[in-house]
Image (cartoon, rainbow, N blue to C red; front, side, top):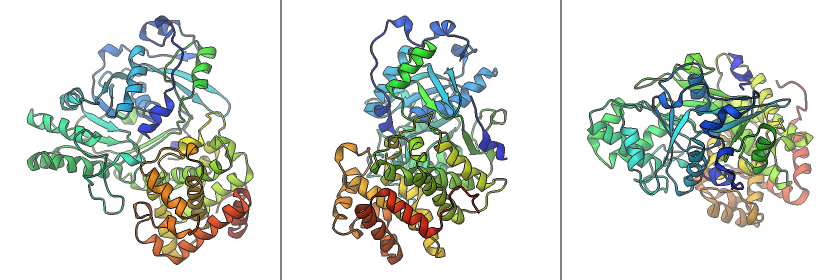
Length: 516
C-alpha cells in the first residue's frame, strides 16, 4: 500500500481572491481555448476527448486551486481513458466566486495544471470542468443542477471553516454565517428537496475538505438545513443520500502572476488562472455511494470501508505540520515552506513534532509505514519548486488548529506525553496575531483571535481563554497553560530560532537520524 505515498502523478474561498490576479488583456485567440489547443507544443498534454459528449454527472461547490489539482484531475484522467459518463459542473456560492467564473468562461472552462517536482515540471491542460455556475445572488440554476437526475455526485471544497457544525459537540449551528438558505448547505438542501419532490433517486455528497469524518460532518450540516425545510424530506436524505468520509491530499499553492508569466513564456499558453501543484497526490474514500460512482479502481484511489485512520494520519501529521510551522516561519519573514525547510531549526522542528508528539498518539494504520510517511512529508515540504506560500498556510488558524493540532495535545496530556513543540506552535500563532495587521491572513474569527492575542501581551493565559478554539478543558490544564506561557515568553525575549533550538535540546533533537 506504500505505493499510495509514492505517487508522482503527472480553502478557502478566500484563496480564490488571493489567487486570481488580473493579467493584461490579450487578443481572444491567444487565450487558452478549445480552438487553440492544436497550437500548443508537444510538451503540453491536452484533452483528447470530445468534451461536448461528456455526461454532466458531478456538481462541485467551491472551485479553487485544490479542487482543480485533485478531483478535477482524476476525472480528467478517466475522460482521457475513454469514459464519457463523468464531467464536472463547477459552482460558487459567494460573491467572490465571480472571479473564478470570469477566469474560466472565456477559456471554455479549460485550465492548465503545472506540476512542479524537485527536478522537473510537467504541464497539462485539464478539460473535465465543462461549466461553471455562480450562485450568488441567485441559486436557481445550481439548485436545478443538483436536482437534475443526471447528477450522481455533489462534491465540496469549502474550507475547514465552511461547515456550520460545532467541533466539540458535532451539532449543527444554524446561527453561523456558513448556515442558511444562501450557504453551500442551504443550496444543497434545496437542490436535494427539488430532487425529492420530482421523484428522483438520491445521490452521493463528497466532502473534499480537511475535516475528520468530513462525510459525517457534511451529513449533519445538510440535515440541519433540510430540517428547516421539511422533516419528511430530511428522512429521505437520511435514507437515500450517501455521505462517504474521505481523505484528500495534494499541496497546491495559490497561483501567482509569475506562474502565468512562466506559462506564457515557456509554453505559449495564456491562462487566466492556471494551477500549480506538487507531483504527490492521494485520495482515500469510503466505498459508500448512493448512485453511480466513477471507476475509481482504474485510478490511484484507495476505496475502503473506514477512512478515519487515514484522515487522522493526514490531518494530524501533514496538516498539523503545515500549521505548526507556518506561523513560526511567518515571524521570521520567510515566504515559502520550502525556504523554511532549508533552515535547520525549522527542518528539525518539523521532524521532531511529527515523530515525538503527533505520531505516538495515532492509532495503528494497516499497511502504512508511518516512518516513511513522515519522511515523505518532510521531503514534500522541502520541495522549493512549487513555492508554497507561508501566507496560504496561515489562513484560517482558528478553524485549523482545533481540528489538526489540539486533538494531539489532548491525547498527549492524557498520556502524560510531550507537548512543548505543539505549545510552541500555538505561541507562534499568538505572536503572529499580535503583530502588524497588514500581514495577517484571513481567518473566520480574525478579530476575536487578534483581541485574545493582544490581551496575551500582558497575560499569556488570556489567549487560551478562547473557547471557540481551545474549548473549556485545555485552559484548565495547568501543564498546558504553563508550557504555552513559557513558549510565548521565550519567543518574545529570545526570538524564534533560539526558542526552537532550546525546545529541541530539551526533547532530544532527532536531527537527521531515522525516526523511532
